[in-house]
Image 1 (tube, protein in one colour):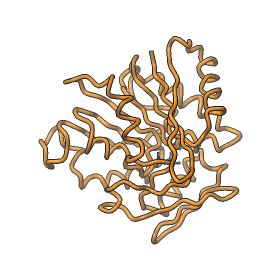
Image 2: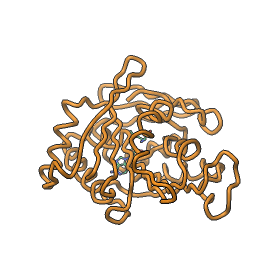
Image 3: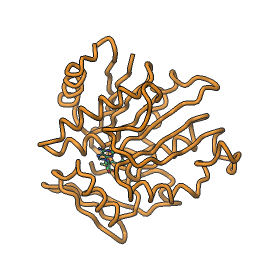
Image 4: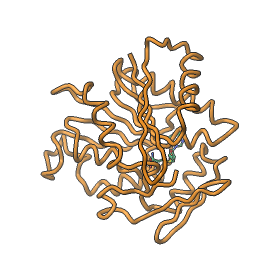
Length: 261
Ligand SMILES: C[S@@+](CC[C@H](N)C(=O)[O-])C[C@H]1O[C@@H](n2cnc3c(N)ncnc32)[C@H](O)[C@@H]1O
């Protein structure tokens, strides 16, 4: 997990930030502050709260909007229907600008939810994106020309194991580096991963998709996902699994598409 953010919003709202992997954790450097999270603590809310309290600079883990737009849009366009509101959620959004960028540039009539279990992270994001006026766009009318019609951006402080959404009400869920972080906890990680995947499956529409963006190779991630589905008696006819590889800076990243139905 070492890619700095490359989106164009960086220049406007954020300061450059970088991640460095160390043997027992990850160090995040920004111009003014630095933070250190141990691998073993990456499933802990308190560790992330400390991180976001000490650093309010933006960072996009793994890949950014520029890399992902071309793989996410083809995957979701078949399930976007004209005049029907589309619902997309980022679980463990951190300071990523992926969802705001999709709203600003590509999506119409979309209700988007940036969610994270860190209170400070969500408050920082809310303050940053308040300037874009996309949160109130539907009710107050378009205030910016570049904002697509009737988009709403919401910020929710919640644990991805207990998502505050009703069954089968969400079209797309993005997990970029969140279950990766959880899985770094060798004791509790797999259990939390299972709960998060099941919770996503509960809230997804019948033709909805969970999209996981990770640096975990298919030899590890695919059996892990299949294990969750077999454990919770989700039949192979109830989902389909595929993935794409994206190369950047001599690193390979994987985008897994878990489609319900
Ligand atoms: C590696 S960062 C990725 C952040 C962001 N998705 C990105 O790509 O830049 C992991 C994020 O997941 C959040 N997180 C970890 N476990 C979580 C959980 N159980 N529920 C919600 N958020 C969680 C952390 O607070 C952190 O913001």
